[in-house]
Length: 260
Image 1 (cartoon, rainbow, N blue to C red):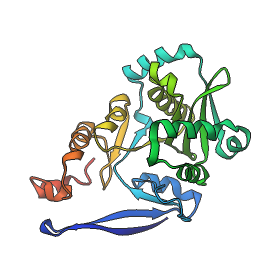
Image 2: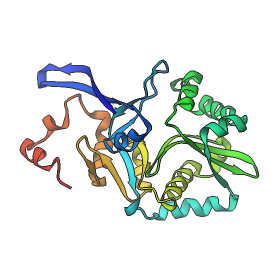
Image 3: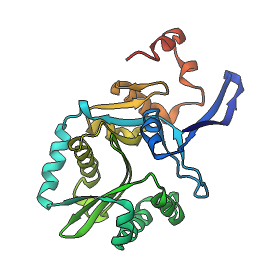
Image 4: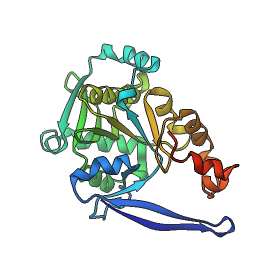
């Protein structure tokens, strides 16, 4: 993989000169290293020919520490009576064999996501080569959800999910599908499930619902979920100054960067 830096808005008053940090995937074998370094796929520019990833506060489940929570069990009890069938399918096979797949995704995007996800962006995401597989959830051959994933021998990235909106009104379908993918990864001998970013209060459901979590703090994977909850709750009110400059004791901050 190749790493590059893109200059962002400066804050000269505090000597904060931010850079967006990105990497380019050069081959499929790069994926584990890319994700373990805290990068996630970038899909904001549909004209990009290179497959670009951005560095962020990524969240993952470390499956050797995973165990079901009471919330996982509660949601599963409510849904298990529906008899949902789960299929793990190669994405390219599904695109050819299931004509309803794209229509289902487009309908969900139109009703739930809106302008943030254009049809061109959705098609771009579906065509990205490293998005290898799809989990299909159905009741009596009627699809109720899909999850587009990045998978290899040791990891799964739960990337984009699409749901039956009516079923979501009566059941915690999104929570259950995420948990079910995590359980599939555990049963399949994977090491990690990546759950995207962890910013803002809206992301706290991921933190509350699952055990075995760690987040990338810019230097390493940190298991301190209480600190992550504080960071998420305060994200909306932060200024542009970085955490090193915000630290009450900058020396202590530096000494703790590599501690586990």
